[in-house]
Length: 114
Length: 114
Image: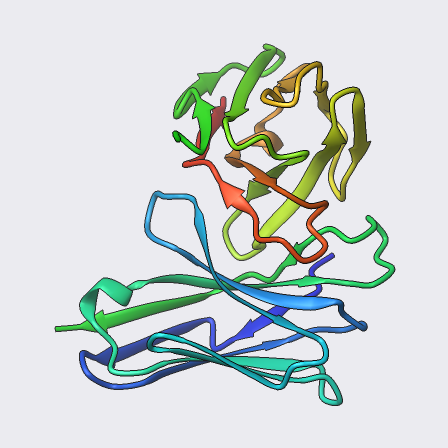
């Protein structure tokens, strides 16, 4: 069963605009991670935020975490055509069914038009 | 470092055939795992290992076997392929047990079962 669910399922924006993707999850977490997947490639880790953190930045990425609402958002500022990819959130529950293994959502497909 | 290497990249099988997907990592990671990715379902954990000689089942283990004789290698065996196993398979590894560390993914193996 999926822990994280991304919203929207697909997003299309113009180059230079900001892109926001949301992730909701069901149970308590140890940390939440965001990954990017380019078409036909493997996933690449972008950023990790721990359950006691509220916001984290990495370059043009900003991640927020609201544990009271069990949700996270990924903001990509000043998007580029190269940001076109699928984005996944992944959660690590403290006492998950499979221990502390990452559980992935279905992903958001981002298309940045130039 | 090559990172995580998966072979083959593409494979077509007939129902009932068996095969092994290979995965090797050169980062001395203790944790290795296999996921399958299907449209709209994100990544689902098949099997994982926290070290040589130790393996455990994930969310969707039926029809698959794994072994971990060395730290570097973690092959995934399909015992008797079924059309429902048509998917893209990803091997991933981590320094930790996936608790806080990021996962490093291979490029994937696309399997079609006829």
